[in-house]
Length: 262
Length: 259
Image (tube, rainbow over all chains, first blue to last red; front, side, top):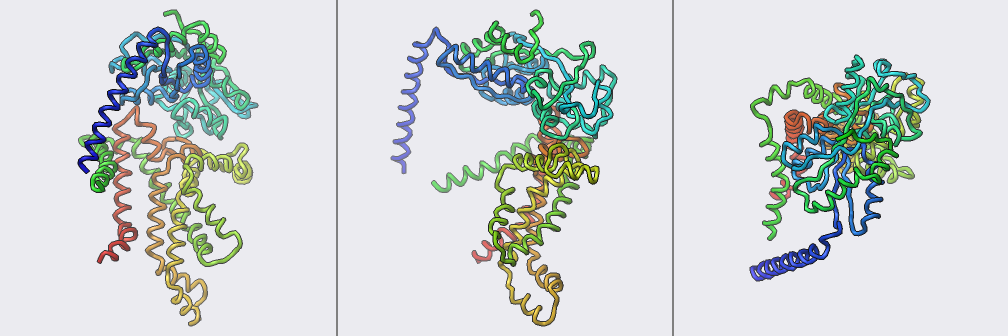
């Protein structure tokens, strides 16, 4: 028994020494070009746009792998602060980015790379004739994002601004914006408040009812590489890509608004 | 070596529980439990799970009886279908229920809405339906096992003495399968209490109406971790009670064998 343990311990030490040596030479060889892999945690509303951008980026930079982790920004912050091995964080609002900045997980100034607005979505054909936020109060079930999710906070802001109060017994709260949307697109909810980009992505399964600009909420998306990332070069390259003309073109094709002047 | 692995296994189960106990806000426990969101969640959980257990009994016991006693073609297929919700992921069950019972485009949902003006989705009864769907198989399997293993000679004796089928069932069969019945009901109740995937997909997440305790824990993990932890402990405590009350059913056989 003891000899076996000793054998495996020695093998382990030798293997790790070998690994260290190998990576050392590999890193020296690829010092100039970006390579390797990163994990990007991004708000759920970025799902389609980032997936497309990931494909484009990986094609333009062979040898790189970008993996995405989509979810509600609040959940992503929890994961990052719990030590999740994430390289880049793209939040759907400043408040969640502020949490990781205060927590020390992000040590550089975040870049705002996109913006978004809210819209009401209803079933195709608008069977309940919803024309404004005020009409939401007379529906059976309205789907909103949960209160801590950025789109939930924005929705509450818009409703308060419009002077509309919804009966809590008629509001179902989604854990992220995609779940909120699916309550209308695939379920029985009469209406939902989601981003205009989500309404666009959902295509013909839903219909958007516009929230006028003077009552709407302007959502900004900050992005930053994480201090603990083991591939800083690639993480920064991704951040740069989101604000590059190519990245911006893709984002806007999915309905995102250009970012405000920094 | 075996002892080492066993210790790791024990730690695997015990550590998360200890971590939960450690994180609990003991000083404000009562106040947190009294928050409206926590009270609504617990009240809904208890109500819906009890209703689910009730329906599981009402429909599950006859089904178990038929599966155990009747011979008909396709019996094993029916048994497999009944066991299916135990095996596949709950959220898949929720999606399936959605396509069966949603008001728009649901197989039956539209009809039910037209006839009765009632929709399961986003209602308390939707939560009950989702929980019954996942919990009933546990009851059916346990009761069927009990029926198969009981001594049928008592039933035969009663019948030969002139008892009707219903009397035989009520006064002979039921008391004999009572332990299996309780165990099945307890398992079904515990499963219904913990149901999450099917509930959130099918019944939605409405505080006071469909936001059962597991849903509340999931939603409030970020914004109000105290509530999430306290609710988790509440469910944990109930699970322990179920386990302790079932120990004779699960471990009784082993204990007898050891004697």
